[in-house]
Image 1 (cartoon, rainbow, N blue to C red):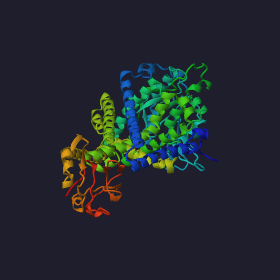
Image 2: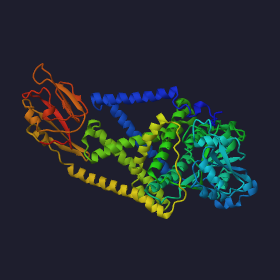
Image 3: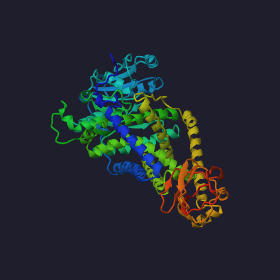
Length: 635
């Protein structure tokens, strides 16, 4: 018997991720990128490459602007979808239905004491509360640890078989128990979760007082170890923005909501009818949120919805209750967790775009755009961050080979995109922390672009695993409550790295500013270029001149130039009659334009006396030579 506990059709699951249609789309995109790269190499940065770069910059800025608008909308009109405390206190236990809590556990020995205490504190009648600890049958460590605790009667340990399981994942064990629960409502907590005591009542009252097409409500997630180190402060600032402002804005606007991995409360009957979770998706929460949104137009078929819906409603709401979690404090563990999240977003994107036209109809145009942004778009933005940061660092340190790939105008657009986009993202996270009076976290949020560099690293790992290990679930380790002494110790290493990075960037900026006006073209042949050099902007200067007819490009004069980079330049010209001279030189990037002849542009060059081949010391030519500031021209 196969124990993957998958109740979805294959077309709705990530089980067979690389289906034929998906492969065709992926190959088409890769072929387009390869063709663009070839055109850029063969003819310089021409139309296709330029258009691709501008499109990427536009998507990047558009995505960031969308996040900022969501944040601004939340500040202006944020909706608290939960009952007031007084109403919760007045809620009679007699009207409360049976509530199910699922807690998947794997190697969670240290987190068990705090978890059991938090679940015992939930304000819900024990005779109407069932809690299941879900443990794999091969997890002897967790089973032995649970035997040392005296559990109340409403907490049961369920052993999930793994003998024939093709995968090991959180949604698999959730599905294993889905059709055995007796609750009307259901929620999921992780081992490190500490939900507010009245969260179940708030969720129930939100269901009760909302339209019946509301099938899921999401609580806010926050961290109890915010002060442990810089990484946990960045994580906290990220969650403050995401759960405090982004998700409430999506709720108010009726747009798709990527569910959190915990503290989402669902109607059990609805969840059973749609097949539960995707056992093969490593971010089953995000996928479930998108699938629920797509089905909102068909919810009238559900038995508990007696009325006929005239239009598509909002199936998911965000309510005002908090679950505190443990923020990942170790960099290696954080990359494991974040790479799994990004891989799951990509899985969700692939599954829900197998039939793009159907997806657009069911999501709606705006909903589909939001879906793209929060799934596949997330990975694209992280990858673009790598490119934009590389361009910015190249500018800071005068790595002028970058001009062989990106002309100054395009380079400046990308640098502006990074600076502008990061400024908005920093502003969002700083304000999110300040509004909650987390002043020190707001200070650390000023450096959150470094946090996104870590996301880019995690994204590369996610893409590699998506290809070679698509269903592998990397376990995030939890360590329970954090002591004050551990907070100080664990934070020192990250603080030292942060100081080194800041000092290095400051020195690079100072050096770049000092070198901005230095444009030097030594040698007699280049004297005219030196006089015509003119700075364009802070990113570089360009000089352009003419090598007059009769000027000697001799070994002696060429020996005065040494431009050391990488690449290869090939060009030909005919100075006097039908004889053509062919030259090849490895290096960085030069553009030679001869009147009436074709211009050849390549990735670069390195000119020195020993590199010249078949050189005629008496050759003369007329032409234009363009050189960018920062090239190391030396005698």
